[in-house]
Image (cartoon, rainbow, N blue to C red; front, side, top):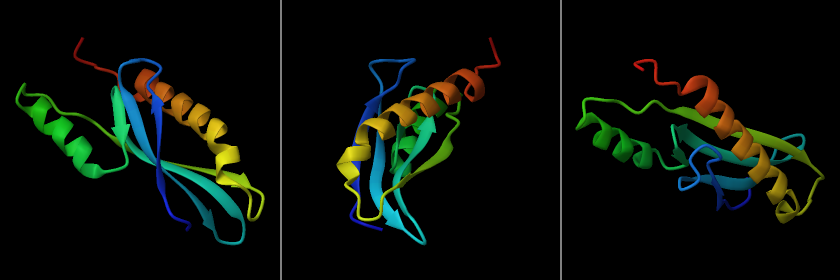
Amino acid sequence: MDGSQDLKFLSTRQPNHSITARWFQAWNNKTYAVLQWYAWPGGGHYAPYQWFLADQKAQLKHKRVPWIAVSIKIPMEPLGNLEDMESLAKSLGQEVQKTLEQEIFIDKTN
């Protein structure tokens, strides 16, 4: 794994909410660009304590905040430039977050 950095993208369902993912290059037999975060309705972050804080606020209203760990591996050229993959990673991240919010994080109480 090469040094990680933050990669931010907006939620397509709730535009004022952003997702902060961990973004890095990893190797095993192949080289990958990797995007990771904990997704929850309307947001996401790679640090678990961010979800914990959101969940604590929700518990004050007798609710909970569901989450899913997301890890996207994008194959890339060996010793390729991670910056060249950034646009694709943001697009995939937004699509995954949107799908989770539309299909998984559905409020079934309404």
